[in-house]
Image 1 (cartoon, rainbow, N blue to C red):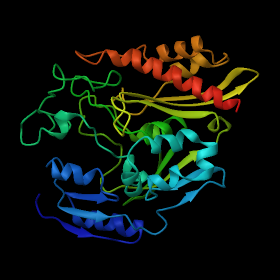
Image 2: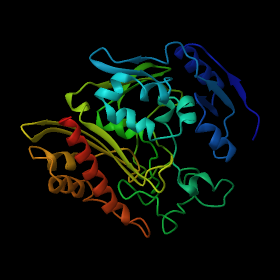
Image 3: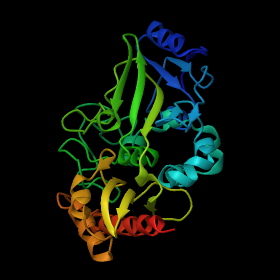
Image 4: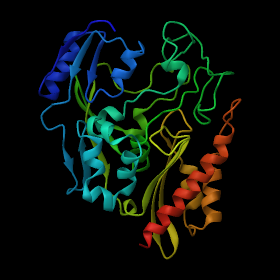
Length: 334
């Protein structure tokens, strides 16, 4: 690992200034649970680290206003264990509990979690030219296409990249229409979470819509009555902490035995956190029976395209959505 310089500012403004002054090769670091891994693999090679783990006010957890507000530096464990979040928005708490071990949840920040990079093995293990990867080296090609693609995306892929977006927390936030507040050299701006993540298309190396030096400072989630009847359901190869083969974040508002409002987002099967308006529309105005839940799951996967080894994900994701709808519906009556 090559040498790098380091700074630890105390305010968001000072952090952005430090990043700008450091120039190309600067990286922000909070908990470090993702960046350090990539540095060890020689995928990331920062020249300067700006430590944002102790920025003033970055550990904010505010649940009493019109929106839920989380500072980007708040730890995953602290939000997952918040009593209001657990009771009123279980999909948020569950997406954090099921994302990582307690040790990682104690270290990782929710802002940094939004910017995890893919676990595609060709991206992570191909540094040094072993495997071509357009995400790591634009124009190099994609070894996953026609390769070992069992874990790759069946939604949102392109001819240049099929890598799955790895997060759990971003999927839950996508279901609830969260906004991401960022600070850059030009000041603050707010990005709907749906616009934070970019489809790979011809430029898979551009994963996020952040400008160079922009820093996530806050996450805001609109409050909704559907939050209580919600769940984050995750299917993986092993029960201990692993990345999703398929996951579903579902929140429902049910009145008179029918779904009046549905929020459905998917993980583990797409190149970005995937909001399914088709699944929501299929469930709207209907009873949350198993038959209707499966219809919603199939609607969500109608445009899925399988590769060589990942076709099983299509049925798996449809069933995962149906299971999540059933769990959420049961909570609406508890």
